[in-house]
Every structure is written in C-alpha cells, then in structure tokens.
Length: 237
Image 1 (cartoon, rainbow, N blue to C red):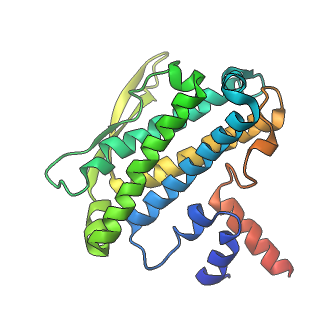
Image 2: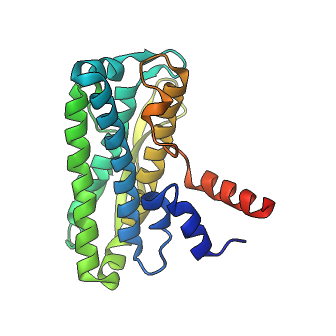
Image 3: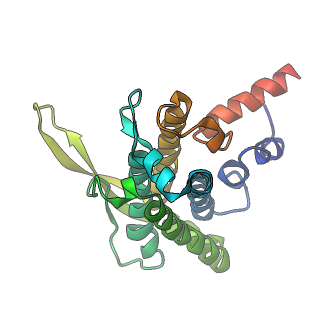
C-alpha cells in the first residue's frame, strides 16, 4: 500500500491540481473539492485555447460542431453539457456559502441545449472562465475563513433534482434527492471527468478535427485509474 505522501508525489507529476491537492490531509473538504473542479475546468480551457491557437476561431468552431459518428455527439455538446453541471453547482451551490438560512436546490436537467455554447468556442471559453472563477473565489474565501467554517458549509444539506425514467414508456419525472454541498461537488467533478473521457474518445476517432495531440495526457482519466497504475508500477518495481 502506498502512503498518502508517496501517492501525492507520484500523482503530482501527472494530475497536480486534480488529485494531489484533493488528497491534502490539512485542507478542508470544501476547498479540496473546489480545487478539483477548478482543475478540471482549467484543463478544458487549455484544450479550447489549443484548438483556437492551432486552427483559428473559424476552424475551431468547425471542429466544435462536427459530429463524431462513433460517439454520436460533438465536442461542443460535450463541453456544453459539462459546463451546465459545473455552472449549476457554482451558481446555485457555492454562491450560497455562508448563507445558512438559504435553501439550496440544484435542478441539473433545467438547461438549454443547442445554444451558442455548443457552436461558439469563444463563448464556451468565456463561460468556462466565468465558472472557474466561482470555484477559485470559494477556494480563497474558505482558506481565509479557516477549516472549521468551510467544513460546516461543505456539509450543508441541499436538494438535487434529476429527471429520471418512471418505468412508464416515454415518461420521465424530476426526482428530488437529499444531498450535501460536498457530495454534489464530488459529483460534478466526477461527471466532468467522464465527459472529458468522451471528448478524448472523439479525439481518438479522428473524425472531427480534434486530435489526441490537442489533449493533455491525463485528460478524462479517472483518478482511480491513475491510482491503480501507480500501485501496479510500485509493485512491479
């Protein structure tokens, strides 16, 4: 079994912000989760910058909108969907930190499809920067106020709403689920990594103009996968 310190050092070489910071034993959970979400968004911003720098705005928009037949989706749709969830927890969740009297309701499936964020790389990038700033502001605020305060906020109860099938054909219903702010921050990070993995699949298919070289090596890689690789390498050494 690798120690936390050893694992942190190993992960720092590949996923410094996403994993090693989140494992920090002296950081409160809210700060660590905000850092993890911020890091994933930061990776997506880097990808958008690479597309723009290598292809120009017009070329990047074309790549953004072209459907991959293997995934049956576009790069733009995957980014838009990822930002939908991150924006929801940022605006409706993080914005209420410190306001104990205010209930938190997260309606994940109330979102706009097919808008400019699926088609315009520049607009998508501006949205990502805006969302990331919410997480970064929370990080600065929680570090300033101290561990006890942000730990209390992280355990705040909330209601997360998901549209789920009812068992009847073509019928779905928005279901309220009891949760906490820290649990939803964990969910949005996990959800974002999952969709980054789909974007990586689109890149590997090489059908849209997005190529593997446009992505960081660890883009869309689940932290548990990386932990498994590190442990296998450790045992083999």
